[in-house]
Length: 146
Image (cartoon, rainbow, N blue to C red; front, side, top):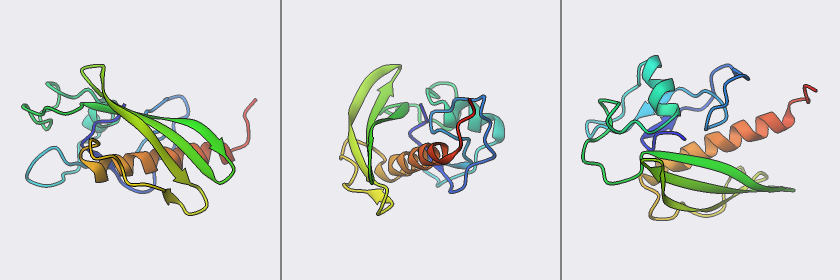
């Protein structure tokens, strides 16, 4: 469950297969929680709060009076041919806040619809969904380690 204010940069960090991370891989990125513009979080915050969410009251950057979610998760519900169906769940204090489907075209390399209006901030969550898809597709191309 990533923080809803975390914007992953392209190109994840080297994969740590033993760490199951909500966005699939370890990503560097920017925190957009401050009204002063994006900032690059320190490595300790990156893993503890940006990647794992639920930073409300724990991270100094998370807005105190934020009425929105404090974590978001993604899951692939169907991988069929040239498309992926995802489902997202935004949570607030470990309870569902908003949820819904997203469809990604593997062929076009983009989502086929805009994020619903209740996903705020939309461009950040859209980038998180893209990062999740990139990690998922990379893992699908790796040879099985059994």
